[in-house]
Amino acid sequence: MDAIRVNHLSFSYDGQTDVIKNVSFSIPKGSYTTIIGHNGSGKSTIAKLLIGLMEPKTGTIEILGKELNEASLYELRDHVGIVFQNPDNQFIGSTVADDIAFGLENHCVPQKEMQTIIEESAKKVGMQDYLNSEPTKLSGGQKQRVAIAGILAIEPEIIIFDESTSMLDPQGKASINKQIKALHSQKDRTILSITHDMEEVAQSDFVIVLKDGVVRLTGTPMEIFEHEKELEEMKLDIPFALKISKKLVDENITDKKVCTLDEVVDQLWQLK
Amino acid sequence: MAIEINHLEHVYNTDTPFEHKALHGIDLSIPEGKVTAIIGQTGSGKSTLVQHLNGLLIPSAGSLDICGFHIQPLLKIKDVKQLRKEVGLVFQFPEYQLFEETIEKDIAFGPKNFGETEENANELVRKILPMVGLDESYLQRSPFELSGGQKRRVAIAGILVLNPKVLVLDEPTAGLDPQGAKEMMSLFMELNQVQKKTILLVSHDMEHVMRYCDHVVVLDHGKVLQESDVKTFFEHPEWMMEVGINPPAIVRLKVMLKEKGFVIPDEILNEEELIQCIKGQVMIHE
Image (tube, rainbow over all chains, first blue to last red; front, side, top):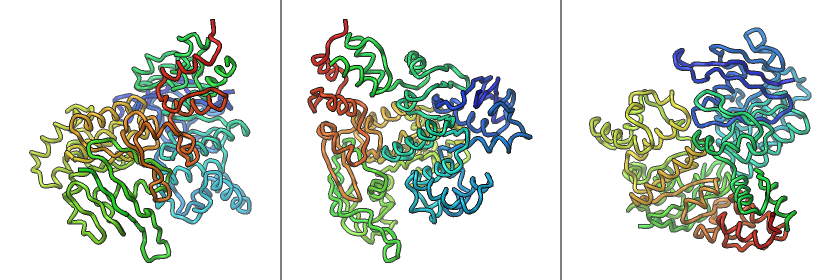
């Protein structure tokens, strides 16, 4: 079953110019899908449409087999969580603990279980010492951690990350990515990640490439990276690992292109 | 003239229960006309340090000499107003600070604040706009209807329009698409090479540090942990990982290959040399 199915979706902010143009794609349940595209390609707009923050001009969105509309919106939002790039857009609670609790309250989690979940999810993102702090007084990276903790607390079936770790330092990013991957692999959650990080893209199951509101390419990371020239024209790039892998193939050192550093090292080690 | 920082200390919330010393006696000399990277983990003091460079923060102890200004404790804000024209500080996600109705008004805000007439300010805006890759058709548009990357360009134009001698950039490419990030960095390199502006780049992106910077300063818990030229810096990646810095992909690949028994000289930092080095150590595929 598909977690998300988008059919002929179009959207316009001003009622005149479409910023999403007849977009169709589906995201298999339990997959780790990345959406890439140049700034202004419509990635974040699609994310907002998927959680029903805005209504499509035309087309439909199905979440877990059910069409997203006014009647199903609140039921489906129980199954979909989002972490925005700018966490200021989603703070509600007056303290970090209140903010993490908000989603749990909406999911009718009993009060006595709530405290443990809040503490555990704050710990997963390294914010356990800030539970009584005011979210607005935290740094950008800390705010992103709190927003992610809110999602980890409720573990919805589908989680959308809209460049959610862009303000974190590399160590913070690595630790959050580990939590996200665990949620995906151990709990079978569907992850949809909007990103510019080609190393993350290389590790995903499936990639959707947007250009000017249109889906230009879909496929596995390797299938997408085959279109290097087209990606460059779309202001994108291929990962370093693939660049060096291509050169290794050109030099007849290896015979197959790969797109992660682990794969490059494995290939070379076997030839040593 | 280089930027000289002497025994700089900064304490937040002095004499309150929340007192926190963010900088512990920083001594640095930042070379003029070069690109210097300031790196370190969240909370290492990077932002606190760079906010001293245009007088947004005043030292609790120690001093700085920058663009002819001597910044020391108890200095009044009015004494450093002119410094803010000389040192342009671009915060992380500067697009969140856009506020005017039109792009023209937003970029012209700075020059008008420094006494330019509206006509002169608008003239400066027209000159600066192409430099950030935007044309005059954008002038009367609202900054809020632009994409994230375009907003970033407008925000940066708002600093460049003041023609600062020193540019301090806090994660200037965060959130930009890969080519957008390259274009933005090319713009800064042009400002450095052609207009000889001194650039300080606060960044977590070690690919950018390796490719674009001359000099690297590593901060840790409010102290200078290391300072060196960029080549020497990336020749010794092991300690970088220990302090939570993610080295560039080529450096990570070298570390991984060494762990598998490959012999890779420290000085190799480009793909071609690395491939030639590997070639001699594997069975060539026929």
